[in-house]
Image 1 (tube, rainbow, N blue to C red):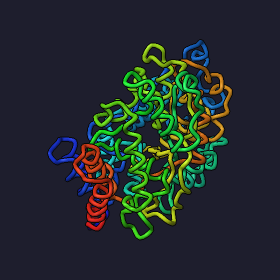
Image 2: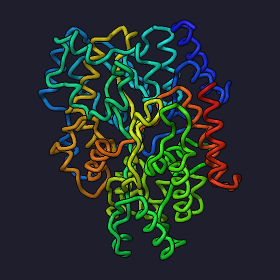
Image 3: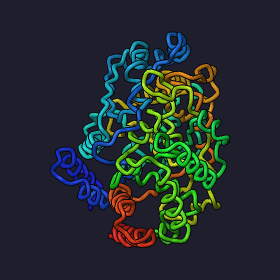
Image 4: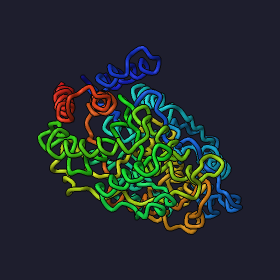
Length: 502
């Protein structure tokens, strides 16, 4: 199939999905055959509190605006493009929401351009992207790219390194690809020899716990996974059923269940695939992970098998569970006294250390990167089909610049910056206090990205595996439909290898 035909078919396929003319399973299988991965994609999925930018709780919010120097650059470099309208379709994320609701007005005033940002469910973002790529009409000037779409879009966007080299007169001073966290560039924005934009957003697993309960129990934050289980069991034994030691996102058949599984699997020295490309979650390390997870589940509230990340987060927010290893985006929400019962009670630390040495990328398959800090990030890029590539490049630099990232982080607390120095900016440090939109967890996010980040395999079939094959069977296991963990994992292995081979 020619590349143009493949992309036309992908666009038609995605339209059918959005119109509910095709099942999610059939879509994922066909998408995989086209090379369109969707590891973090599922119907009706929303980011954990990612759509809620949190205003700062004190008067500093009024002082948070782009620097005069940045706006002067925008004004000068945009002079030839006044009157241009730029368009972007994006998922509801902290960066997109903060830019759309609070920051783009400054860019528009300085540049004389208009920026239209459509905030849509993820499957509709994919629909807009595939249609635009296939038609080459250039309806959208910028693309929001989930990491699992990198292979599909790699030749349809500008590599930012090329733009810097080819358009030096449009380059923002001190805007450098090297300033983005290297682990994110490699894990999110790179496909083969190209950069598919730059890292834009980074939800990632950290460990969060109730400090009042830990003090009552005489505990320190767990150093290892085994210590975590021991603590969770002790809390449940002592304080249940009013308070449980742990919680999870374990809804059968949902991508969230697969996310939890990968963290425990990687944390026990296992991997999803081995270097031969075969499923390896049923090896000795994989079975150790299942034994651990099965024990840990007994320390969680009974409803955990019906929860995605939203239910998991609410179990903490409403005072039902004491700890969780999950998305760092939850943390600022927990600090909001108007929304939760735990404001000021939560602490954030790096995830407990693995029980065994992590496998290296060479020991896994399809670029899988083992790490207890499961990540799910995205990139921002300029479309090669854009009728306005130069003004779009100006906007992209501004939207991902140091100054704008500081404002996004401070105004829409919860998002982990993708630029290194943002974490140490005084405006970020000033919000390191209890309250809505806190940034007091961000040093943990930075350390996790650098030391603990885990990334799922990069293969088209991962869409079906992560959203169907694996979580459906894991759900059956926790429902008691298998005689043992080995039987369940052997069944997953057989099914997963068949999907990959097919």
